[in-house]
Image 1 (cartoon, helix red, strand yellow):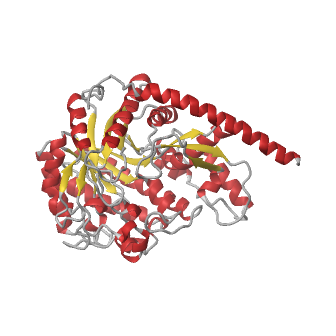
Image 2: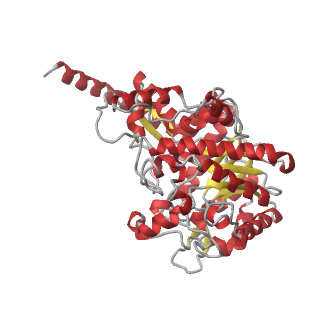
Image 3: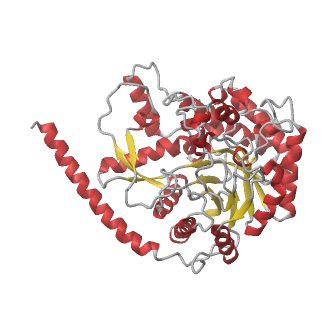
Length: 510
């Protein structure tokens, strides 16, 4: 046996022992913390809400002047990629049932409803040269009805549904997308900004770029990781900044609102206590979250230094003449930096992160190869219906504390947090998930003084969950997709959330 083999046997034995010790510590910690809920109350000005997205609930995909978007094309052209070959053509039929939906939201007692606009319902071909009056009318009716019921509308301008016409011009791999998005944002601000006081430019750039351009898990499914995803993100961040500055300079003084971006991430827990895994977890956060957050929220702007270093180094080894990660100019860094009024965070779960010691150069480039990391799950963590979503509430606290330390005490809005199951009406597992995650949130707020201002459950009701179709359910309201009318039924979690909001605490609430 050679020295290399002995080294790896020894390393694997140490790693196994460390993981065993971590598991023992986790179990003992879980037994104490899971049985103890944070007894503190949420502040009087803390906001509770729910969320949805246009393609996932509206339906009416080709009615009333709406144009085709990339998810219409993706699901119609490749139905085999969606579980049960379903799509969002009808979805929850919320386009026709929005009045009933607002009544259901009212029953929950939430302070706000976060929903997204369909770009092609407003601008059928994506360009502002043609505005669809029926789309403007629909969203005006929804906004007005929410306000009549004392529910704050929080609007996401873009939630993954690029106009197909613009995608055929390259979508977010085309630098002109920043101009087109700014034009779209102007139409939105002009028509709805007199009543809407909280705006979100983009929902989850990582899912758009990493999964849609770098991979094929989301539309448009380019599957060009390490190139298309970096270009997508580069243009998307400039588009966000354009919309922010447009609002800040031309609309804020008249409309008195706020505008920011929503980003998502797992908490990256080191798989072992070894230094290289701790560094790997930090590096993974830089690649997956800092990629988008650093240009906006860091004092220096730009992409994280470790990301620039690793991509440049690997690009050179692969024979590229320059880094596959595009460079921002100094002017662009300053233009993007500080384009926020709050930090929108979507968080669901945690992963264990390992360092990759030796990565041979072969095959296609990828973001994961660039990061020199891999992830896995602890088998002891409770499962949900979604394979990627484990119940790890302490990871939520750790992430929030990390954000405070990384970017200062910026106001944080939790814009999504939720649990996946099969759609049970008596959804005890969902109640338990939110109970634990709300307790973890209170821990972050009271023990570590993290500046969290709002909490949003994903989702308002069961909906079209992208590649999972209607097989994975996140809703507080059950939707019968076999019923032509898409009947809604409140789940046990809806009543639980109503009680939490009314009491402004979780301790003692069943």
